[in-house]
Length: 134
Image (tube, rainbow, N blue to C red):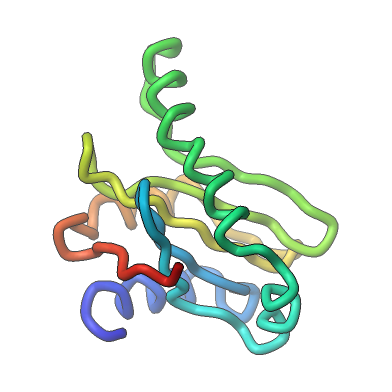
């Protein structure tokens, strides 16, 4: 991996510690797993990852909808599941946006607003592009 992608994972690991479960990048056509904790890998092996990522791609549409309906910018989405918390944001602007999805153990204590702003300020989508896993 190396480069900006490795730095992205390291930033999330620094912020979340051992509660980080997985990290994925996606765009409108492809996706890439950047990090998968060993105990989570078995669960992910049983999933239709492509279908799951396809669902997250709706974030491209909903982000635009939220930004047209609200007076402020969309930053991130959090979903709570019984065994993990899922986080999604987009890095970059305009058509060059790259989706970032990560999950954490449910006991995570993390300021998602702070991590979102740090990630969005720190990573250029030209450097963080998606290599297809499909």
